[in-house]
Image 1 (cartoon, rainbow, N blue to C red):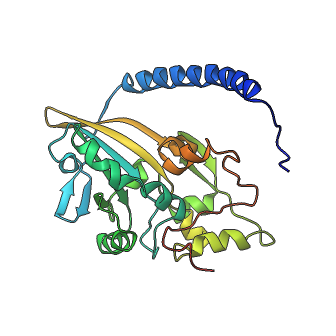
Image 2: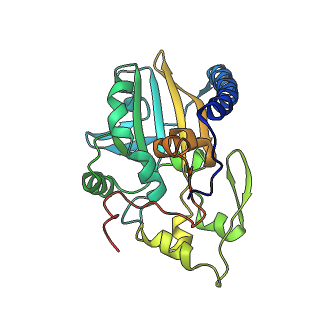
Length: 255
């Protein structure tokens, strides 16, 4: 016998219609936020960022590949990692399917990480992905977009993330086991792992000039995490009382 509240079809429909009103209001709010995003002022990008790609060296403008809009997912994969972050990987699992649709609607989608291009290629092959992935190794790109902190910042105990100064947090010895285990899935330790941060940024190209138009970090990228949009519609929701449950998609059969 289920412990959840039961009811008649009529009671379900009444509750569903009430929820529908809330859902419609949320959609209207989301539409308004999208409009406000599009009205943010554009910031001219004068620094010459360089990337390594499958086709060779590239500038930020080159990543547009003939489109006028560019989306970059700041994927946590540092130079000392042997695999990508589990959470970033779960998000990126959806990219290959819709990247082709974006590319045919004047938008290029890339991932960018500080790991060398050879590591990114190998991991992308392992995961079976096809979206373009650029290495920002040796560039200021990740630092300037607040998705990398240096060892000096880590020791100082503060860095800028999500548009504000944030403290550097490290687990105490009595609870650090799960955190070390999480970092180990990327082939590194907790301190090295947390020097990388997730996020996404949007850019426009107009008259040969690149502009930064939008960025989001932390839970600001929840909306592009496809599996959560489905889980939020299941009877048990995200169901994460037991902690982090997801893995790299090729690791579920491992005990």
